[in-house]
Length: 384
Image (cartoon, rainbow, N blue to C red):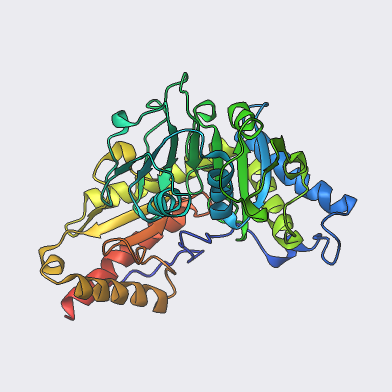
């Protein structure tokens, strides 16, 4: 196979932290109020601007609250679990690594007695029709480590009794979501926006706020997870008064990302770019003799964490450790050629390649990358 000559303009295809927006430079952070107290008027205004602008661009319902949390998406999601659970039984869905972390939190840490776990292997969804919405329901919108997403929110009833708690971190800003079906939504800046790590977002519906104001969990709640105190919502969290000290450099960076989103036409444009990235990969896979999607169901295939398995008989005769070594060789070649960084599959997932398809990855770069993957694979195979 002939070696390609054209290389992507941006070689970063990591699934988190993800590529920065097109045209980003360190100069984008020059107005950051470094050295200032995050409680100062100027800093609180920037923190609140990140909240307001995020809510506007996502078109979250007016009566939803949105706050900035420590600990990235994990901190946001676990704050919701620790603060809201305990009143009802729980249904929890997991089809990849992070979803299984939430299962461990609910069963092993919070020790909730009555839990229905709906589990599926990598590449598949559990049966959504079996979920009991009289219970509190926890799920990821998009499985970052498996490339599997829920197709929509039609499976969630509007008249549910329990709360729906959604880890949306690698889906929000890239996928259509019916927010009215989601009582808690969490995400981080480092995914589709290409922001910096360590900061998360927590959105609460009026039903979630009502729970906070009428229920005190039986377990201790660490300060970093505390969004209510003695049945009183800590309103400052949703107005720019963060629980702990945020990085104002990271805040400046996410404001830059949000301004970019606004400049290109809003979150609808982000969805369009991401969907086209998936379409480009699908067209390539459909013509390939050696690669396939880990998720075979097109309706639940991720447009951001695009995860690929190798179907070639030559590869599948190897044991798993040898398969992982082969993929490492492919990834190493692409890095050495200055073509792609960080596209190895998640360590706990089956042997795979994972390419970020969020909107900070430009469609032209995705098109240019794929022939290089073909070349690298055949180079490894022919030299084996």
